[in-house]
Length: 272
Image (cartoon, rainbow, N blue to C red):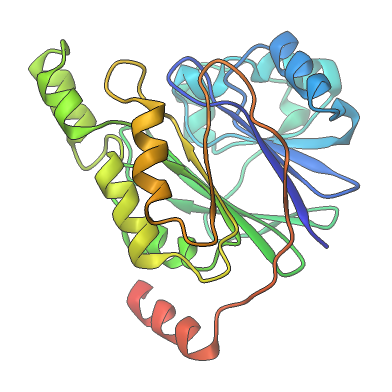
């Protein structure tokens, strides 16, 4: 089977990513309103009835803003850690709250969602791998630096949402106060264009078909600059810059490759 993916919105004003097969789908984060989520999915020809669960990466408002209304209206389970639930101040029906743990896969029909810790200034932040049979898609945003977990999982993906939050020169010369610049650049802040490019060029699988560059800063980045930068190294990978104003197209990820036994062993050794 294959996966269909789209960014419904990506940026500090709201993050929401759609991943599914022909029968079921999940949302990773719900940082835009229920109404806007419905409108954008409808424009893409996607139905809310196919959504079977929402997974929350961390408690910042641009990742949880719409979850309460979405979960209530569509009676959706919300997979979230208890620390994230408390720190986010969310009011969800207890029957819909499903705590998850890192490294423990969650089965949603033919989809499998696996979480792993990431470096970000939140209480208990996680990234996700969504797989369907042999096809894997990663969601790697809101990350301060590429730890071994990110490198290990990115190297196995057929497609990925990867943060490219800021351009170093634009951030350095921009209007943000020093403490905010330090937070963004810090090990629990966000990935720069250069850091994201290093992950892409240094660790992508030869079968990575789609890279959706995500969570671009409104003030400290430029979509055209990011597109040009990554296009120069794209080879066979389709580069898409996800917008903070509108949804992307729906992309069909039909995995055609797997890590070799040698690569898998090397990655496992690096991680553990």
